[in-house]
Image (cartoon, rainbow, N blue to C red; front, top):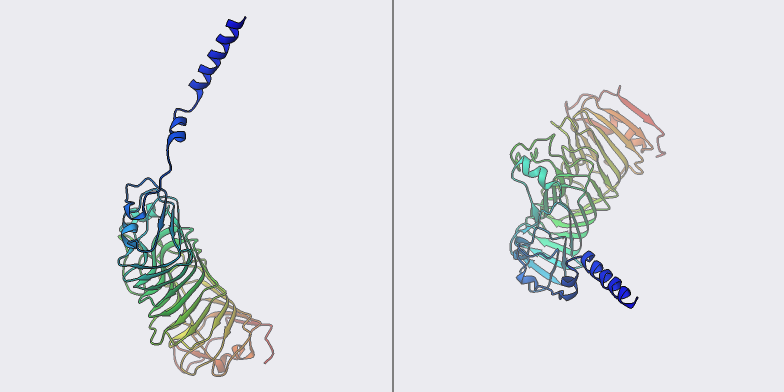
Length: 382
């Protein structure tokens, strides 16, 4: 009887050993070691990288492994002597500044496809870039081409030469809680791979209808333009479904506070602004729109001061416009308009409803604007 029990126990033990995972002993025996960040290369198997003060930031970004998932900056001050090339992993990559200050000497966080096929592959990688106390200098703070659901949040961009954030073919992304300070040119830009503004083409076969930043949101962002600024605070080019929410443009005069341009894009059909605050006087106009069969809606717009030379709103061509909940109409404020736009106004100041007095036909100077497509409702008291 004892022998039978012994044999049964022995056979059970053998069975358990046979069924156990073959790598159990490896997990038990292995020692988790941390590779110094300066030794990490593209062949590293580690999915998390920590950057400390004194590390060569741009070299680390050049040599990131293909499976990297998290890049952590330890709190401190850093200088990037070259472009910070973003990895394309096919998943989510988190870049956490942890309150650090990053100074750029050229381009900041960057990734741009070279062809349409590559753009479709790049589209599978999304980023969460967050929590830098400041990213200062350089040509652009972030320039990203082709991504879906990327989030850029809680960063102050200071003194970029070209743009703080430039997103190209980035769909359903979020740019939020961003401060842009002392920008030389543009603040935040959403556009296609074929830049209508500059005529540049980012990659082969990029067009205005196949490389848009559709349904991206910019919210709770402020642009403070430096003296001599030559660009636009918020620029949206040939993209549909974009929402600009709870944002501010202030500082010195620039070219425009907001520019939405749909010209040439048959799929750029809707753009909305909610609760926008304009505190300076742009040279060309505050809210500037170039329509292409689109519906443009502004719900909540406070403009602090008017100017005889700069319109509060500039409607460059006919299309459909909805203006709601404008609480204030400052002295000398006026609207530049095409000859016969379709306009709905609701809960706006009295001045906006006086088309012959406060609207100016900039298509044909001196001619009255055709009011057959205007609908005014619920006028606010003076």
